[in-house]
Each structure stands twice: as C-alpha cells, then as structure tokens.
Image (cartoon, rainbow, N blue to C red; front, side):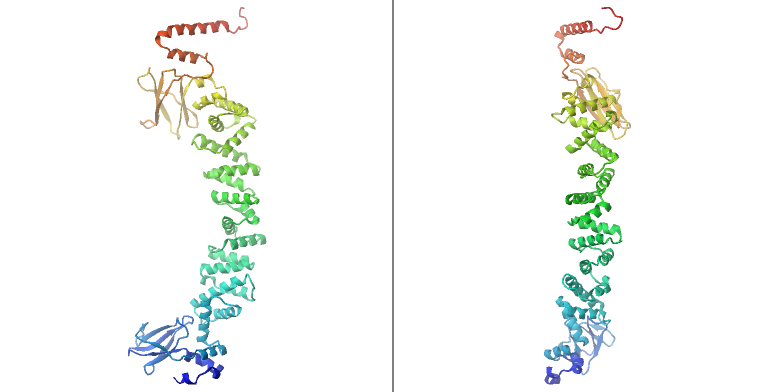
Length: 543
C-alpha cells in the first residue's frame, strides 16, 4: 500500500494522529463467500458494535487488541464466527502508531489498547491510576471492562494506603459500586478503609457483604478502632466480629473486655472467650457467672469444673449457682457413675464444714461424699468426723446403702447396718415390686416389701446368717420380665464386736450338729451371766 511508503514518524502531527490509528491498526479481510455481506467488529472494552462492508471483495477492519471479536454477517442477519476468511495486517508501521499515541493518546482505539495493557500489567502508578479512574467515568467503556479496571485500582489504593495517599482517592473509593466487585476485591477496599481509619465505612461494607476474606490483623484493627471511637453501631454484628477476632488470636485487652461484658453465645464459645480473657488478664465482668449458669441449665458439662473454679475464686458467688453445681456433680457421681475431679469433693467438703446446721445439708451431697470416702485408703480426722455426721444423717432419714459397711474401717457403723444384707435399686420413675425367697427355707418366690427411700432409690433389707441365700427378682409395674434378678449370701461379719448376738448366732449356725449342743449351752450360760451381772438397778429395787 502507498501508506507503507510515505508514512514516517517525522510527518505525524495532531491532525494525522487523529485519523491514522484506524488505518495503522487495520487488518485486511478478503471475501471468500458471496453469502457474506458485512463484517461485525466488537471491542470488549467499548460498548456497541462496528459494522464494515466489503468493497471489491475485501474489507479493512481496525483491530487494536488481540481480544477484538470479529463476526461475519450474511444478508439475513445471521452471524458466523468463522467463514474461512483470513485476516492479514494491512500495514507494519509500529513506530508511526506509537508516535500517534504520544501526540493524541485519546484516540478511542489507542486508548482502549493502552487501558487493556495497564489492566493486564496489574501494577500501575499514580498517573496510570488517574487514567484508569477517568476510564471508569467514561460512558463508552463496558461494565465488564470497568470491573477489571476496578480490580487494578483497588489493589493500587490498598497498597498506597500503607505508603502515600493521593488526593481524591477516598472520594473515588466511596463512589465505587461495590456490588460489581468480587469478595476478594471488596475485602481489599475494606482493608484500605481500615488502614485509613475509616472504620464506619469498613463496617458498613462488612454488614452488606460479609468479611470472609478479611485478615485477622485487619479485623482486630477494625474492632479496636470501633471500640476506641465508641461508634454507635449494631452491637450484634460487632460482637460477632469481636469474637471472630478473638478466635483468630487477637489479645487486645479492649476487645476482650468488651466481649466479656457483652457476648452471649454457645457455652463452648463463651468458655473459649473466658479462657482467653483470663490468660491475658482482661476484665471478665460477670462472664464466669453467666457461663456457669448457662452450662448448668443447658446440660453442657464440658469444662464446667474449670468454669466453677474460676467463678468461686474470681467473684462474689451466688448460693443458688453453687448449690446447683454441687447438685449436678453429686448426681452425676452417685447416679450416673461419672468420675468428677478431686477439687469437686474438696469444695464440697469445705461447703459442708462451714454449714451451721448439718441437718440442712442436701441429702444428695451427703450420699455423694460418703460414697466417695469409700474409695479412699485413708481419711483425715476432719474427714472422719464429717463422714460420721453424714452417715448418721442419712440413716436418720431412712436412707440405707450397702457401701456404708466399707466406712466401718474409718467410723463406727450401727450393728444393724453391718449385720444386714441391703438391696438397692434405682429406677427412672416407674413403680417396682420385689419377689424374693431365702434358701434353704423358702421353696417359692413371695411378694416382698421394698420401699422408695429417696428419689426412686428403692431399698430392701434382710438379716442373713451363714449358709443362707436371699434370691430376689425386681419387676416393673406392668411387665412380667424381671428388671433385675440376683442373690445375696449370708457371710461372717467382722466389725470388732465379737460378743454381738448376731456374731454369736452366726457362729452357732455354722457349727456342725455334733458340737452344736455344747456351744448352745455355752451361749445360754454367757447370756444369763451377762443379764445377772450387768442388770441396771432402777429406783426402788433391792440391793
């Protein structure tokens, strides 16, 4: 072409720079099919379409970028992406095209090529950022390309917020339609607002779009600044942000103080918060009390012991909560056979010892602590005194358990308890019946008495001598299948009172018949001598 021969950098002025780019970017397309009438060109960066006709079987199409879309259209408006047409660059004058840009950079084709280049580089300076901002205001630029521009600008201003801020940047970020961005880009803007101290703007974005991509550091900074500025905002969202910040490792005292005072969530989350606050020495307000109460009445027992120890050691306690805790732990130990920590019993002992009236101690506490004492090899004198008081309290209330016998090595236990076989059965509330027989005397099971001694703990007792066996079956009210069946055997009892009638009779029961007559005469003689020698003289009797 003639342009190839006559065009040079030296002759380009503004007038030529306005028209030459369309020629210098042109590609020649030859018509290979008579059905094709026009070429449709779409520039992804610009709105609308550009239609070019064929003249003498060819058409020259400006293609400034490699993403330009070229379609072929027939007489009926049908379009084809490919139709066997080959595009060839019309001119190869890169230097001239560059000169045109330097003289007139606003040419539409050169402008979009330059914008595309900047967007693809992703790293821009302040001058390029201004050009990109101008493009954002250009109504001819497509929304899709503006989204790409925004992504580059957001990264640029987020970085600049840490270095040198330019005038007008705040206004530009405020003007951006955040819905056009993806979540990562929104978080970059949010980070920029936080770095600039514009926490209300950042908070508003989080409220609308969330904060999934916000870093732990930025989230901590946001919460800290909101609390320092005492911004009047939605407490629920702020509390969630604060808690998320704490979970992510934040140890700022102002954040922990606020969370301890205001946060109410799951027991698990509240415990994590309390643990963090105590660890860094933050104020916990009434968090221990709120958490303990929630654990007690929501049946969440994990970490409840530690929460209780913090509660009683760090603040004025509520008797109601303390009693509820001891009741829960006593029930779990005595009924559900859970192993509590040693400290639970230490605090339970201390609570009982400071009680002014042993009769007012809840029976469940007494049952749990006395049962716990049976697992000990040694009891202190203080513990022995407490165990004795508690066992006799339970006996007075008609509450009998076989484990009392194990305490005989520490404290005196009444003979009738030691010499009795005690059957205890705990129900879930249903009424039960006892059928039993004592071998070798009874041949058939008979209905027997069993009483509800304490909150569905049923008890029955029998005195069994050596060689006797108590067989029992326990039934529910409406069921013929035994809930429990078993047997208890009479055994020799050693409770350090060799002359008790039970021990003497038990010995007699175990003596062979050939020696029984002599032993029986000896027992009767001793019994008579005891009555004669140790008869108490009453008033008015003879000497």
